[in-house]
View 1 (tube, rainbow over the protein chains, first blue to last red):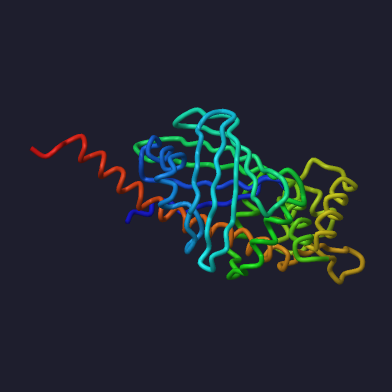
View 2: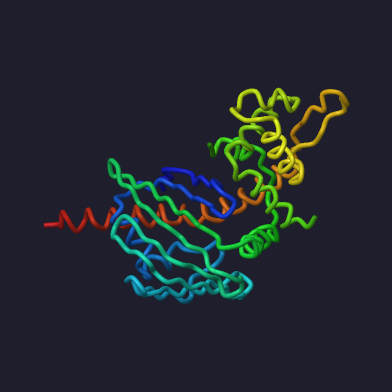
Length: 158
Length: 118
C-alpha cells in the first residue's frame, strides 16, 4: 500500500483547524471517495468504527447524514448541509455532531498535480463552546506526548 | 483552570503571529522585554500586551533576575496543545491510510476498464 503523505494539522487561528494531505491519485477519484456513500463506507471513521448510515445528497442546499458505530456499539451521528459544490475541486459545507452543540464550516479544496492530489480541509468552529466540546472529546482518549509538533505549531505562521 | 479552558487559552494565544514569533525567540533562551521588542517594529507597551496574553495562557513566565525581568518559555501548555493536535492527527491519518488503499483499488479498476482483456 502506498502512503504518499502524512497528514499535517495546523491551527492558523483560534477558531480554525487545517488538515493537509497528499493522495497518490487523480482528484476525480479523491472527490468520489469523499462524496459517494458506497466509497465513504469503506474508509471514513476512526479505526474500529463503521459507517452504518451514509446518505449524501450532493447539491447546494442538499445534505448528508452519517452515523458511525463504535466497537462498543455506541453510535455517533453527524449531519451537514452543502453550501458550495464545484466538482472535482472544491466544496463548502456546514457540519454538526448530534452530541455536540453548534455547527462548523468545512471548506475542502483538492489540487491535482502530476497525478497526485493535495487535499486541504479548513474547519472553522463557530464558538469557544464547540471548540471546547471537540477538544474535550479528543482529550478523553488520551494520547502519547509528542513534542515534535511544537516546532510545527510555532512554524505555522506568520 | 480546567484542562479544556487551558487548551483554549493556549490556542488563542498561539493564533497571533507576533506571539508565535515571541515564543520562537524564547524557545532559544530567556530574554528581557527590551530584547524581545527589538526585532519587531513595535513599542514596548505593545509587546508587553502580547506578553501578558502569553503569560495568562501559562505559555511564558518571568525569570528570577529582578532587574531584567526576563521572560522564559513554559513547556507544559504547549505539550498539551500538541498532544491534542497529535491525537486529532492520528485519528484522521488512520482514516486516510484506509483511503489510500481504496484509491489504489479505484485506480487499478480504471486501468482495467481502459484496457479490457481480449
